[in-house]
Image (cartoon, rainbow, N blue to C red; front, side, top):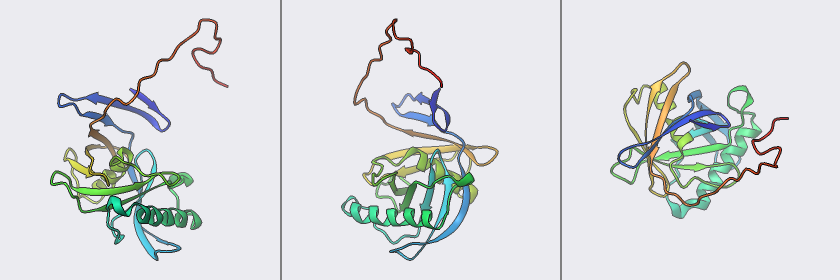
Amino acid sequence: MIETPVGDVTAELRPDGMIAVENVESYRHRAATMVETENHGLVSGDIAWGGNWFFLIEDHEQELEPSRLQALTEYASDVRGSLARHALTGAAGGEIDHIELFGPPRRADADSRNFVLCPGLSYDRSPCGTGTSAKMACLAADGKLDEGDLWRQESLLGTRFVGSYRRSTRGVIPTVAGRAWITAEGTLQFDDHDPFREGFRL
């Protein structure tokens, strides 16, 4: 069990070396939502929760290639700023801080390719676990992905996550699997003389 700011998730190491994370409940808040952008006209997308609030766009006329990173960032940033200007939010006024564009996959073992603009002007090098969760919630709501079926999401860089879901009260409980590599290790030290060595609450 892993505690996150939006709820507990679980992780499992599979025999094939993939890490599978069962995410928090994900759901679509609004379908086919139109926003008038400053530089790209009217844009339609779904507002969905997957652990973050997303605006998911299929019809964008953008080519999802690493060589177009600057143009993709400018487009997604324009959409995000326009959503804020028009007071379009997630449930309970949640800020939509992730913009996700979808297109045809390049890999033969993928169903879709995406570009995800994260808070600020950073982008996700992975297919985005919370974004894949939001996508599956939308597919489930549209009857395009059945419970237990696999959704294979490719990132802008060609990496891949494999997702599935089980149904829940509001939407789905998604599981997203991919490969991970250790890039650093850290050691926590607890000094017996430290009065806050086990943390504190105000």
